[in-house]
Image 1 (cartoon, rainbow, N blue to C red):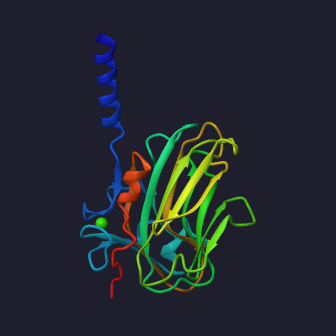
Image 2: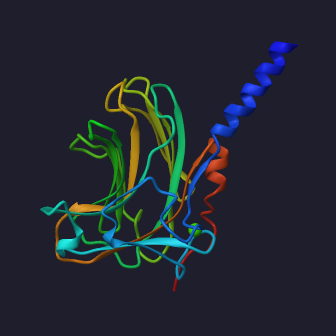
Image 3: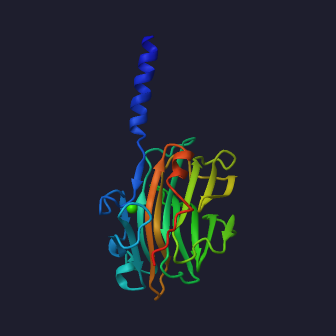
Length: 242
Ligand SMILES: [Ca+2]
């Protein structure tokens, strides 16, 4: 009996520690996020939101303030989230919503990716070219899939994913939903190595160009299971901002 009581207590504590994280901007600021990779272009606004009363707006151009550490080749402004546990064999349920007021240029824009702490290597990535969304292993030449209208302008889109973290490509896997529809379910390497924790960054990362790019971000969250995660995204809602 005592062991059952102790087990129950430990389970309660563990579930408390695993309390879901939200990056929904309902704090009216950017404090929910762990780090801002160039905050110059990031603000919180209430004119166009997916959830609650606030969402982030990220706007960058080729101007000097949007260069990363003065690197004339690199434009970025991104929100960083580092889950509490991404060790080998752990599962993370994560997603966010995004809105493009205008189509992005045909150049590659990195919408979101998973990268290793300390060794700073990207593992998997979502790209936007124009209004197309694609997903790939970051070091691969070919994408796993491409949705021609996955980043169409004037409507909120959702990305949700279940990641099983492993540096072994036969053990790691990802299931990805876009606008409520399962797009892919596959085994792949999801950690860079078996030591470094993984984090995600969301926003815009691109080679420098003169054009101005704007994206809205809302409703980012880590959930404890896939059902809870998908319940936070409703593809049937009218989600334009005209
Ligand atoms: Ca919100």
